[in-house]
Length: 382
Image 1 (spheres, helix red, strand yellow):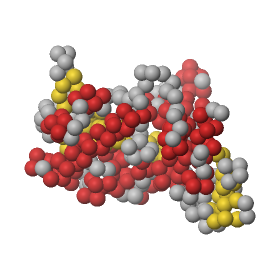
Image 2: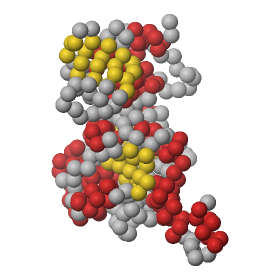
Image 3: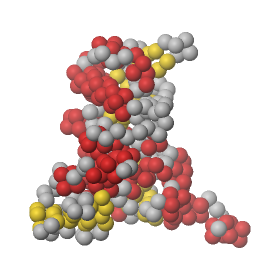
Image 4: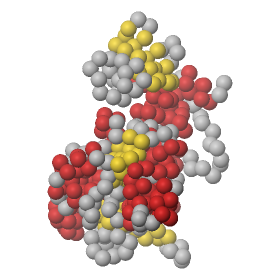
């Protein structure tokens, strides 16, 4: 028997599904309101004998216990397998020896949670955090939003976080592997994030995988992210995905913005289906994460050349991922958080009027050509 079959055999789909919706026995099956979309009449069925499920409503899809948890939590098959295997007491062999072991990864998540609490407490209670509190207030960020996103502050110190975590019995090697400290050529380490507004980056399951830090002065770089670690891959991360997942499912639409603050403000004003790409470059991995939740993706990147290029690159994703990608054309000089704070009705209208990415591409190309010239007319058509 394969590992997959063994895990499946030891996992009861009824028990798993009942954690997310109330099941009512109907003969040899169970019936419920679908946990993936809003409905008043139950259209979701669980079949214990086949260990399968099916939604006959808006979803019109089904599968086994793996596909259920993948769809519900926005995780891939490997994560789903490991999740159920751990509960069932089944050992899942690693693909290669150098790969970080599950318990080591769990330790890294734990360290990141400890760092998140440390940064958050500094923001809320330290005298040094007053400038960040004032900055957030000036940007219109409420106290509730600060708490919801667990925003934080890193001291202007080379070793404050290091000392705190070492006192919590974490090792210097673990801090380095988690990306919380940087190593010099001489082999010395120091806190990676110093004097920055901190944004904990969580995965679909709510685990802190890394951090983004923003300076409040003219220091460079303005934004600093965690390096690649065994649990953090920038190209496979979306800021706010843990908070946005329910809204994305309910609205059947995801909005990708560029910056951390864009997500924070969007959620505060009720647009909870917004996530950020951690920079302008949008990857196929990020689109794939969203595809598990919806086939409707709207891009609302900053109105500059970098944002424009990022949106143009997304043309290639639409066909390969079978997703509808649309583009919001922002007023020149405005970021999403500017528009949302100034006029929520305008933001809603911009989302409704978002252009199909292919139409947006044509408009951009056409704007760079002189369509009175035959040669440019041919180029536009091509």
